[in-house]
Image 1 (cartoon, rainbow, N blue to C red):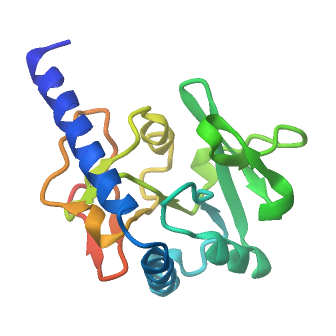
Image 2: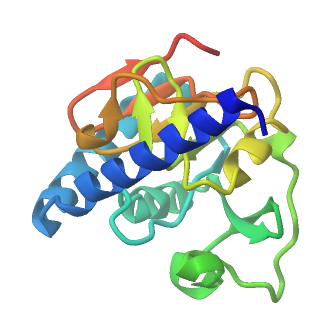
Image 3: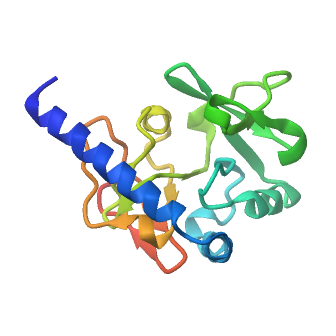
Length: 199
């Protein structure tokens, strides 16, 4: 590994620790209120209006809770797709019921259960809503370190909108990145919608 990549990896690890600590320090009630505000902002995004196939995630730990928003999409007849970890890759499949279709998977994250899941193609998605450990206002995203979402996002159609969601405490001045890191178009927090400049 080159010296530059080593420095970037170390900077990412430091930022990851700081951002996760900041998110974890938010009181439970504050996270719930902030999550609700983020869901309202998602509802107002023109990029999501009319989307019929949306990839999102099932919140884990202190992540932004999207479950009520996902249930509303399902009730409206939209196709909701969630990921599962398959080695270094993420598979995705359509789900119909967040309670019946999900089980604890990789690192305890809720994933679509293996029985009956049918892999879907990322290039058929209309939009993606992705979690992250930290974002900057330009659209750079720091994940958990496995590169799973970056590899999945690189398989999307070029014009597919990718929307990051995070609490405001996870927004930083600059996220260190490499060429393998996939930026997002938009970052939504409880306070603002940041439109990135990198995609």
